[in-house]
Length: 314
Image 1 (tube, rainbow, N blue to C red):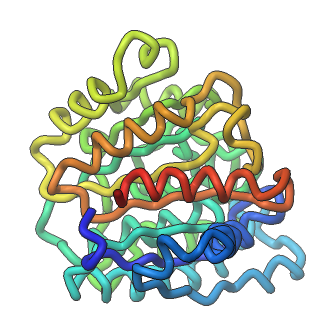
Image 2: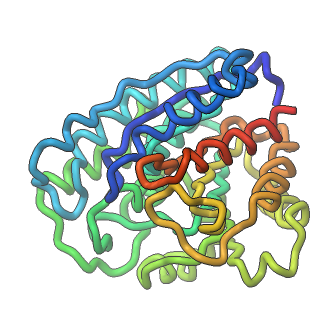
């Protein structure tokens, strides 16, 4: 990545999370860098999207997609912010609260380049393919890819959402000025390090033949091999967005995140994987998400994130 082309976008929304504290993640990363002589933020332009986290004080009225109305309103602002930077030929390096913010990130890229084919690399312990019709929790950080793949792709419904939820789900799937639906095709999605999924998500992956790397398979490949295979698979895409959830890493590394899962990537593996993927000129944005200092020890997760960023920016 060329530093003079990057803008760091802090998106501290945690409306989609089930555990409180992810909103402080982007700030914790910046403060950790401030304490370390501003080696990143002192050189790269950065901006912050205003959150709507005050909505968390309200009662939940849409249990199958909690805070869906506020998540829709927030992600409209996310689209506007990221789209502006893309049109200015900037590279958005996004540090976000919870993974529901990827709804706006993906929508922004597709809205900016409506006639271009978008690929998504999802590095995560979870698939985040749920919808209000399948989610066991209603937490929308488990639904960003469900939104992006659009209405009608998912498995047999398990839940019966309320009319308000269905209405806002439709709005989210058509998010953006151009109201493109769907934003993403199953053939243009690759999962890396997934290992904690509900049955409907595995069904979606199998039914839609979505390419994925689980840890057992990763053990037999180098990170550069995984990256090369991923980029080759997405070769027909014009642009590629990478979403990196810190819970893709092993709990021994990802101490400060709400949903850590055993058998994840090591820190060297994560750094090498991202560095290899970032060699592609098709990568137009990278998002790092789900850092939660409130359940961390001595801000370790933010320090790990800074380590990754320093490795990519060197």
